[in-house]
Image 1: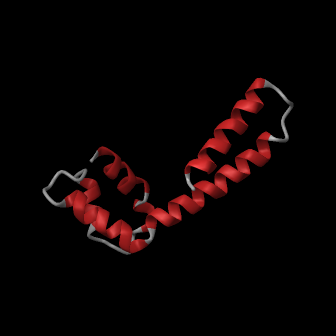
Image 2: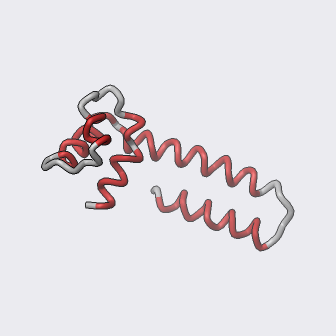
Length: 90
């Protein structure tokens, strides 16, 4: 349930066309049925797909920038994390 709630909050930016979500967010999904209804709205809005798209876009940019810094364990770590995130989203 916590993961679901986190996903709902992360994708809330993409479902502003569902005004009924705002009170649920403000009350932190505490009323019965809030999480289930928010989950339904997220799926109707394509919010998860949009979130994945933006995450991929930012990750690719981060990898591009990491490849421009001096070779070091830190640079390699940034690249490993970026690759992990990109591969995790497949």
